[in-house]
Amino acid sequence: MENVLLVNNPNSGRRQALKYKKSVLKFLLGKNLRFKSIGIDEIEKTPFDEFDTVLVIGGDGTVNKIIPYVINTDKVIGIIPSGTANLLSAKLKIPANANKALKVIENGKITDIDTLKINDKFSVLRFGLGYDSDIICKTPQSLKNRFGYFAYFLAGILFALRLKQKHYTIFYDDKKLSIVATCIIAANAGNMFRDLFSISQKCELNDGLLDIFILKVKNPVMFFIEFLQIIFDKKSSGSKAMYFQTSNFRIKNDITTGHIDGEKTKFKDDIEINIIPKSVKVFSNSDVC
Image (cartoon, one colour):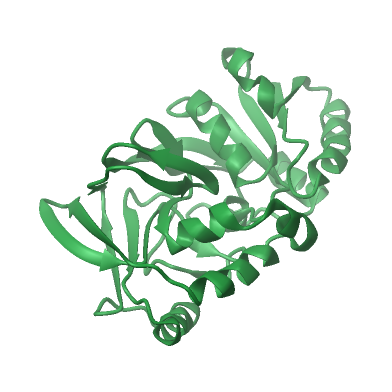
């Protein structure tokens, strides 16, 4: 770590990123490192080739915007989590406290993680349609500012009471499947509520596989039963849900709104998702996540 680019999202996590920036600047100055500090809106005009390390103050969406500039390079991402969910940092065992997160970076343990390519976009966490997308995209910002990640939990209960089913045609591993579902998730990391539980049966950030979760139920009672099975790690494929792994996944699509790592995204064509194994380097507290 010699030439550092510090990327800050000032609106991240109820503006917590602004407080954390002071700690990061103090850390960089104390190490006598060469660095440049920019806002997230300046990344397109920043020459990333000049830097070997990118420190990101923000949430999952902020980290995701950095991926196109570092994928399949030797550049290393260091995360100081300050977003609403911070699911990637939780999976990497990075503390939510800024000074403790900087300690992880200082220790210098680097993990290579997979990346999802979703049409022409990249993702380090997951893609979601249906119920999952409704929670992410329709939870009011005012609610997130007030309650943080708990706002998604409140929205999840509300949307579970009015689940909507849709017909999907999906393709994977030379298979074609027509289903009626309320939710489809393709995940590199399926952890939720920090790292308390996961929507996948086997989910690692560097296993070279997509973890697919398809929820079929519409009845709220059956949904909560399935949700309890997820919480207590009793997941199994059946009439209510499907769990499987694959390296490629395609959804036949016309016009659909979903989310990529928490960012609302409109898809006008078929949605094709592929895994790019071990394509991004990150500082972490874990070798295999």
